[in-house]
Image 1: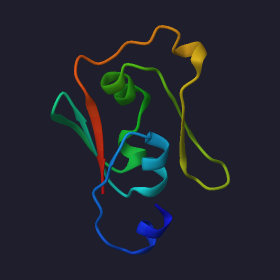
Image 2 (image 1 turned 90 degrees about the horizontal axis):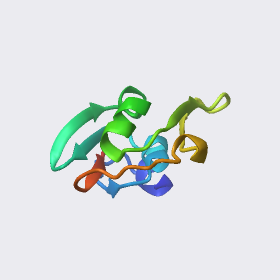
Image 3 (image 1 turned 180 degrees about the vertical axis):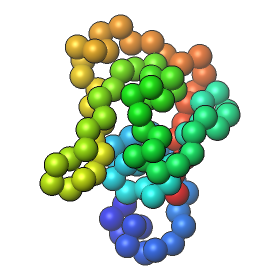
Image 4 (image 1 turned 135 degrees about the horizontal axis):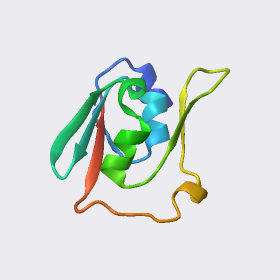
Length: 94
């Protein structure tokens, strides 16, 4: 992903690692049950509410104090009762 980021080209990968997406993608498109539910920058749309709505898990969103990058945490103590979405959810990044 470092190499792709440095190429200054448009790349549309399908990723499911939200931290990877937050680190390398300028804009995101979040899909749930085949429908777009959010578009924007990682800081705009990767919120605990959206993550819960799409993936059915609780998350903590933090900004790293040194790098300013988003870091998503999925602590087990807040996800002891995991629920799964009715159908597959995806994230598309550019």
